[in-house]
Image 1 (cartoon, rainbow, N blue to C red):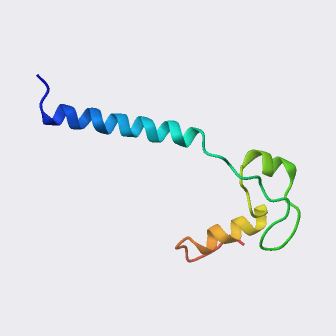
Image 2: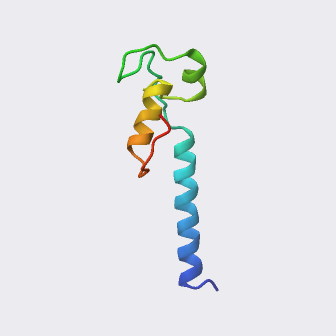
Length: 75
């Protein structure tokens, strides 16, 4: 006879499986053709490699450097 822990585990597994199934069908909006920061064109290869891309490589790199806690930037 299953105890409360077994029943709880089955419930958690069911909910996780359902969330995973939903996330697989998530609608991905189209990528931007121009960078939202500098308005330069985003190459087709980048748009294809990264769904929902909004920034060019240069601006994305700068954004990532701003969001890290590093003393020296390689730029």
